[in-house]
Structure formats: C-alpha cells, structure tokens
Length: 365
Image (tube, rainbow, N blue to C red; front, top):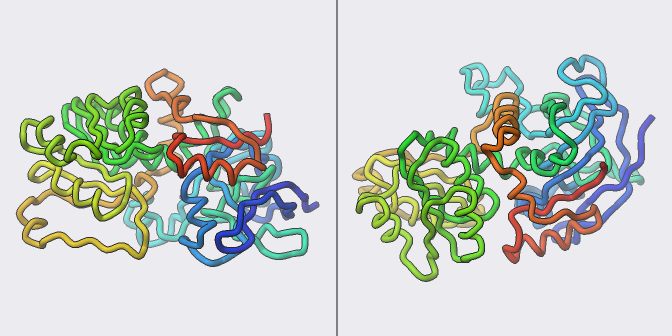
C-alpha cells in the first residue's frame, strides 16, 4: 500500500526548501523502498532549488544518504529487506555504449525508479539525482543501493557522504587524476569535495599535498586531513606558491574543486609539464574559459573532467568503507553538524557561508 511520509521539497524555482507530505508508491519491478537514516546537505541540492540543473519542479531534494531497505519489488536480487545501504546515482545499465566498452564508470543511461513519488494531490516529483533522500522514505532502483551491513549505526552519517561529494573528491584524485605514490598534488578549493580530494591524494601516496583556499579555517581542516602545505590565495599568488613548493616545476596533479574560470586557469598553469588537471568543481553553465591554444599544446599532459569521481559504487563504496573502518580514512571529520529535516534551508545558508564541510540530516536511528 502506498505510504505518506515527510520530505523536503522545493515547489518552484528559488522557493524555500520546505517539509511537505509526499506519497511513496509500492515498489515495482527492480525498485525498492528505503527508510532513510541520514542524508548529507550537498550544494547540488541547492543547484536544483535554483533551477540550475533543470526546471522539472517540484523537486524532492537530497541524495547523500544511508538507509535501510523496507520493501523490494519483483526481480530484485541484489538487496533484501533489512539491508543497510548507501544510495548512489550511478546504477549502471550494462547496455549503453560506455558499458559495452567496459567503461561502466561513464554509464550514459543509469537506472532510476520507473515510478514517480508524488505530493498528496498527485503532482509528480522529480527526485534529485534520481534519489530524493531528504525524506523519511524514498523509492529508488535497486541498483542505486550498495549494502553496508557491517557498518555500525554511529557511522551512518559519515559513510553516507560517500554517496556524492566525498566520493567525488576522493575519486577525482584516485580515479580521474590517477595520483601515484610520491607525486605532488595541489587542490584548489577546500570545501567538502576539495578536502576529500586531499584525503584521496593522501590515500594514493602523494608526498606533497598542497591545499589552496581563501579561508584559513578551511585550510587548517585540509591540513588535518592530509595537506602537507597550505596556501591562502587571497594573500599569495597560488600558481607561484605551488611552483615554489614543487621545486619550481608545478604539481604533477592539480585538482580544481571550485569550477570557475579563474581557478581553472590557476590549476592549468600550476601543473608541471605533462601534468594532469582535474576539474571536479561543477561550473556555472553560463561561464566560459579562454586559454591560448599554444599554451595547451606546449604544456602537454591531460585536462580531465571528473564525473562523480569516475567511481563505480559497487567497487568503490565498500573499499572506502573498509579504509574508514581500518582508521585510514577519517570520514567522521567531514560531518560538521547534524540537523533535522526542517533545518535543510538553514543548512543551505550555513553551507554558503563556508562554515561546514557537511551538514547531515538525521532522519531515523
């Protein structure tokens, strides 16, 4: 029987995120209902609110989530009722041209639930990134669930962040940037994603890890999570500083976790010859970049974009959870505050002021 639950919805462009009653249908084939435990507050949700992702309002927000499977539809074999899961937005189809080439991390036709959740009046909701986890329950495709039954409940908030931002940052370093032992890495922008990229560079064995930001508070947190050097780019030219810290050459890998033309140019010119630039910060679609073509040719190397950290959730989530449980990846450090469903709009404001790595909505124990 369909269920009515509380959830955070944005009804129209730039409207506040408010708690509304929504209807969760019974799961159909390959679908599951998940009781949400925790969900991180990510800037992507605010992009949905502001109409920067699309205009399919109303949106059901939230996507960095842990939950427990409460119902399964026909043909579901990868999860069972009672399983604790991390939700993801890359449920690979196995059939698109990327998947057929063995590049599942680039799947161009990822699965979502076929049915729509609705408001009480029947208005269909568009779930953010196909998840919609600022809710007591949500409906997703079974492939969007990665089982983590061995994770203690006290860690739900931390491991749930792997569902988006932390995975994007760690993956930008390890998967996209292919950081190798002994290499130098610079990360421009030390919010949640950038700081996760620093943690990823440390995991990969980088020996020089340079954090760049305009706020000393963020730089200190970056140092706690693996940065060996910090640069306040309000006080020091970051390109000059990165070069000075890398023998005058530039870093092997520079990760732009901001995504504006100014920071991308800094990343481009702060890398060594034949170095790699990774763009993981999501750019404003109206912005453009101008770099002399000769500079692109003469510097060689690779200019790469990182989509979701080029991750494969079924492979990467369990690996990172294991590293967390071994004490090698401090996911707890990313959880700055814990809030309730009704606090999501305020959490957006806190995020915009740069006061948190992540606020996490706690919905159930």
